[in-house]
Length: 231
Ligand SMILES: C[S@@+](CC[C@H](N)C(=O)[O-])C[C@H]1O[C@@H](n2cnc3c(N)ncnc32)[C@H](O)[C@@H]1O
Image (cartoon, rainbow, N blue to C red; front, top):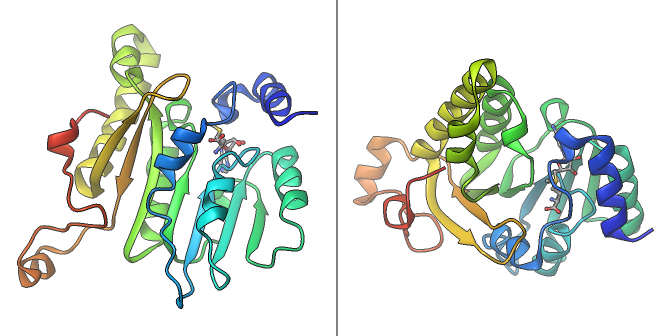
C-alpha cells in the first residue's frame, strides 16, 4: 500500500484525529522543519508530534546529526507501526505510540507539530500547547501549521454550540500565539495552502531588558505584525 493510500484510508477511519486527506507537501514539510538546524558537535533533541506516515519526518531526518535524537509521538497505531519499521535500527529515533497528552516527554531544542488542532476542543489544545511550549529548552522553537483562511471561515460558518467551540478554541490559540509567536509564514504549495507558526518560550520581561532587546529567536525577528497577525 502506498503512503498516500494508507493516509487516506486512515482519514476515512479517524477523520478528526487524522485531520487531512493527504500527507503534507514537501514545501509545507520544509517550512515546518525550518528550525531543525544542524548543530555539529552538540546533541540536539527533536520532537515531532503527529508524524503520520512520515512526510515531515523525512525532512527532520535530513538535518539530524549523529548525536541528535528524535522522538516521534503518534496516536494512530498503524502510522506508528510504519514509522517504527521505517526507522528500525536507527538508534536516534524513538517512536512513542499514543496521545501526546499522555506521553512522557523530555525537553527539546526543536518541536514540530502536525496535529489538527482545529478538530480538537479548546481545553485539549490548551493542554497540548502548554505541554509542548513547556517542553522547550531555552532558545528552543516549536512549529505547527493550520490551513490558511480556515479560522475566519469557521467563525463565519459555525452556529450555536459549534460556534461556541470554535470561538473558545481560537481564543486559546490566539493567546498562545500572542505570547509565543515570533514568525508566521504562508505556504501556498500545499493543498490546501497552510500557515506555519513558529513559537518560542516567552523570555521573562526582566531577562529581555537585560538582553537589551525583544526576544528574537532564530530567523532574525520577522514579527507576527509584519507577516499578519491572523491565526
Ligand atoms: C494532519 S496529520 C499530519 C501528519 C503528518 N505530520 C503530515 O504532515 O503529513 C495529523 C497526525 O496527528 C496524529 N494525531 C492526532 N491527534 C494526536 C494526539 N493527540 N497525539 C499524537 N498524535 C496525534 C494523527 O494520527 C495524524 O497522524
